[in-house]
Image (cartoon, rainbow, N blue to C red; front, side, top):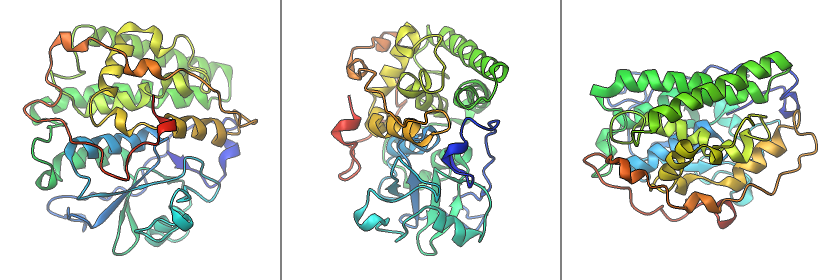
Length: 339
C-alpha cells in the first residue's frame, strides 16, 4: 500500500493504477543481489491496515521468522510525508531510529519520486530500504529463508504445485486483490462497473472452487490462500461500503464466509488482523472518497469466531508441519482491533 507524493486527497480524483515495486532487490540464501539471508539483519515494516503488508505478517508468523526478522508496525493513519512510526515512543522506530518510512527510501535513493509503500524490508545496519516488492517478499520468505524457519513450518509454496498456485494467484490479484481498488478509486461509472463486476465474477468462481475443497490449491494452506485471505478479511469492513463493492457481503456468501473464518481462526491469520487499524486507515486516509473522515461503527465482528465446519472437507492446514506458537510479546493486536 503506497503513500503517493501527491497526497491522500488525490484518491478518487484520478484514474487508479497500481504502482510497480521500484525496489525489487531480493534477500536470498546465496545473497546474489547483495542481500544474504541473515538473522537479525533486516526489519520488516508493515501497516496492519494494508492487505499487501498483511501477507508478510501472516507468512512471517506461519514460518516462525519472528526472531530472525524483526517487525515495525506503522500508524494506520499516514500523512503526506508517508507512513509514520507514531505508535512508538517519541514517534521513532526503536530499531531504525526514524520517524517516517520515507527516510529509509531516501537513504536508498535520494529524491525518489514514487510512493512510499509497505511492506518494506529495511537493512538495519545501513538504514537503507532493500525491497518493497510485495509480490516477491512472501515468496522469498517461504523459499529463501528456509534455514531460519521454525521446526514444523509449513511449505507455503511447494514446488510440485507452483504452476497451479501461480495461476490462481494471478487471477486473484487481477480481479480481487487489485480489483477492489480499481472499483473503489474509479473516477467514472463505466470504470467502476467493470471493476466491480470483475470482483464478483471472480469471487463466485472462487466460491465454486472452494465448495468442495478446504484450500485453494491442494489440501494444505499455501501462499494462494494468504493472498486471498488478506482481501476477504477486509471485505465487509471496508470494501463493501467504502469501495462500493456491494453486490453482496462476504457474510452473505456461505462458502467464502466459512472459508475466510476457517483461516481467521487458524493460528497465524486472524491473530495478525487489526480491524481498528483497517477501518481507520481506509475511511480516514482516503479523503478523496470519504471527505468527512467518519469511520463507521460496524460491521459486528463477533461472527468471525463462530464455527465454520470447513474441517469436514478434510485438508491438513500445515501439511506435515505444525501450527505456529503463540503471538510473541509486543506483537499482539490490541483488544479494540479484535472480535
